[in-house]
Length: 130
Length: 130
Image (cartoon, rainbow over all chains, first blue to last red; front, side, top):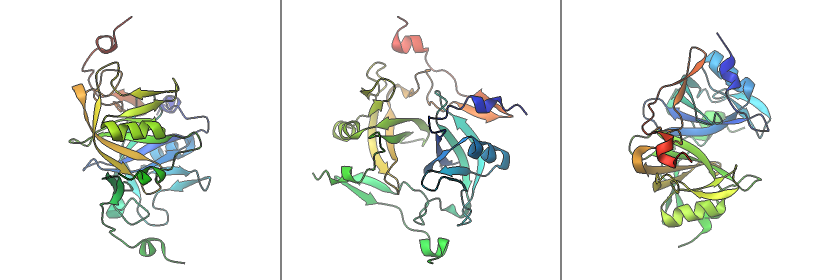
């Protein structure tokens, strides 16, 4: 299989590209994270989302702690080649570390951010509380 | 109206935040762009998407040249406060400068990026060909 596709992805000067994870059925945007070349090739090879953690400076398989992995059904690239979308099915239905379906659970309402999504699972249950 | 909401948005060290524009009805992701504080306040105040162009170093009202403005129906913020979603209605149905509905018109298929979306309008018609 040609790997030429990788050379068409424009990583930024830190070697990263933003990646939008979107539920393949509902179209809901679940989260945005970052990938370097290795995260992207591992994602494509394994069919499961692997990101680059900018805070921990390490590869991070989504769900490695929580079990909430993302199975990748499609990878899309934008016109400038510098943003990706993953169409995923989200194991457990929870993408956010707060225990919600999506990280985008706040909406601007009369000048305030209001949390409009329910917590589906206590984060302490997901990650333990040690 | 309080403007405290703005202090909860975490702009990066260049003063920018990534913004995902998503069609409010279909849920299709149309594009990703960037905002600084002023772009975000102008967007919220006017109800029309205003971005920051990193290549031209200037504010850029989406559609200022093409007429393809984005009316903003909702603004969402993620758990870390460092990514926004705009739920928009896209004037003309074309968000991409290539004349397509979405900037994400390429999909990875057998190791190649394949363009799977039709060009709805010739870019020369949108922007002129001078």
